Image (cartoon, one colour):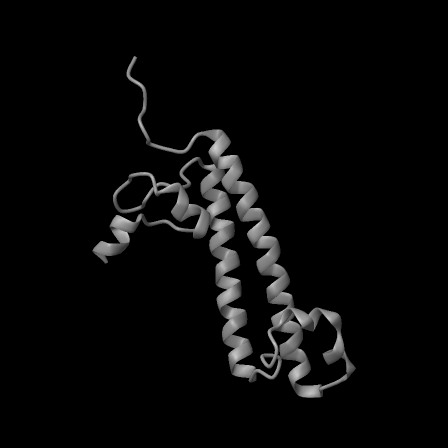
Length: 126
């Protein structure tokens, strides 16, 4: 019987990626809440500004314009949505397969960009 070669990641690999993605979603959600919190405080400058959660922002960046905050929030929401879509691909066992070449995406790339749907090869073709 011919064995399938590199058509998908095995269940152990998929579970490892799932844990990585869940951690990233948790972190990204926390960041989104910080951005939204900063956005709300831009207008009233109340004492909430001194909350310890704001220490997560780099020095000087807590005086962002509403537009910058809005753009950050939109990007963060898209990132979370892309990560959740990656979880669906894990459940479908299609995770890590390039949507152009149909080959497996390199593990190191997926660790850095866990929501990737293109291999470096396909990305370079764009």
